[in-house]
Image (tube, rainbow, N blue to C red; front, side, top):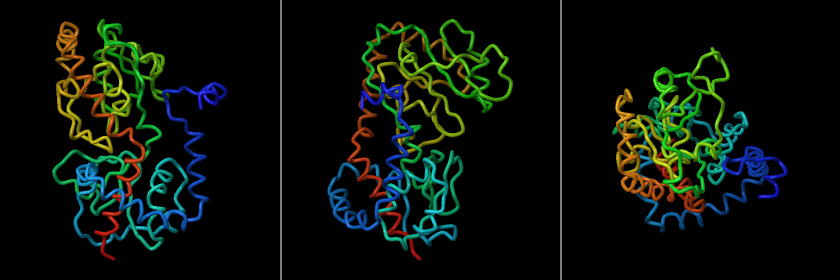
Length: 318
């Protein structure tokens, strides 16, 4: 893999879409009976693993429900465009009968569907049971890093790069792009690019040189949060409003990350505090690292996804 990465000039800190699509097409071309025959064995193994039950109940809160009118069976689903969301969902539903009808909403979902549907993201709410979360678009969102730079050796600033097409991101960047404690900038590819807060992109490797990483929600969640929390840098963010398979709604402020006010008026104060209290910073970093480990066991992640779909399958009434 390392040699392939060098040959194709692949950044080892990023997931590679070429390999993702090769795997997806291979799954698509493999006869469905191959997956059907494995389903019961895998589900038996999954249900025996009691460590998965809490997350199962978190992702899929459904009870018995009528199959949504928008639902499609397997053969109808195969007509979808063959993009990342399609292949991620295919990876799981291919284990289930072709007659199984399910509904899904692809993209950055910020509203709760009227009927139970598989989604990548949902609002953090006590009433989001119609949003059944799966690990979708993981090629972009689920990146983790092996950060070997000690916290003490990193730069005494907070860093962030990203697209700024939402109002809250624009407001933040324009406020802090020139702050001496910040290396903040937008990397837009359309609109007005001739502004002082439009800056060069920074690789993950370059961003890991900084003590503090900002995670700021875009259309839904902050896409950098997973790798940021697996690093040896300290994550700053406001209280999240949306969640994905990463269960952002379970993150505890000032335990897993440093919570900022929604207007970021306390950013400088908290940066100065954690510069002066590195032991407290490293404790939060340790908690964040521990949290991310549960998503890095790929065998358990697969079994858990099967449990989420199996619960939907058993609860849907046709």
